[in-house]
Amino acid sequence: MTTTPVLAVSALVIDSGEILLVERGRGPRVGDWAIPGGRVEQGEMLAKAVEREVREETALTVEPGELVGINQIIEDPHHYVVACFHARLVGKREPAAGSDAAAARWFPLDEIRMLRLVPGLLDFLDTHGAVGG
Image 1 (tube, rainbow, N blue to C red):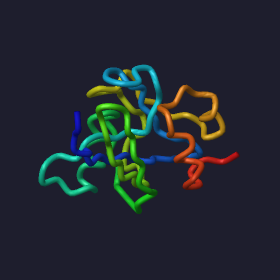
Image 2 (cartoon, rainbow, N blue to C red; image 1 turned 180 degrees about the horizontal axis):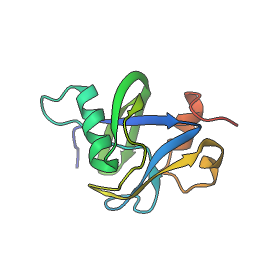
Image 3 (spheres, rainbow, N blue to C red; image 1 turned 45 degrees about the vertical axis):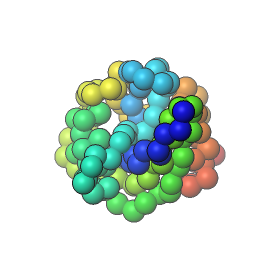
Image 4 (cartoon, rainbow, N blue to C red; image 1 turned 120 degrees about the vertical axis):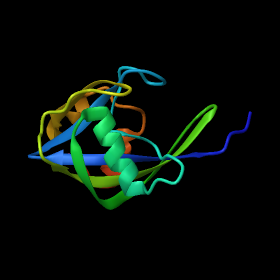
């Protein structure tokens, strides 16, 4: 079965030495932690998709910034092309899980290597200098 790649976005939100993560609550990789993100809707600008996805998954408001990089997730039968953006927190800091997230919370950057992350996330963050040693 051949499918067309799906465009998605994600948000790298780091505040006060902590990174915002969501625990996947459904679909592939339930229980794994990921940065907030999801599919871009028809006619939606990427920055608006970042804002919407973070709001839907964490109830937080962010202001998208520069592109961190592009990641591809290929797990039969799915192929996602994910544009990851830096995003700055605006307003309240306490997340509340929503949408398909089982949980949403801040983690100290120095603890990220101890978490069960979605495959490839740590390598992506390392490659783009997003997390330290």
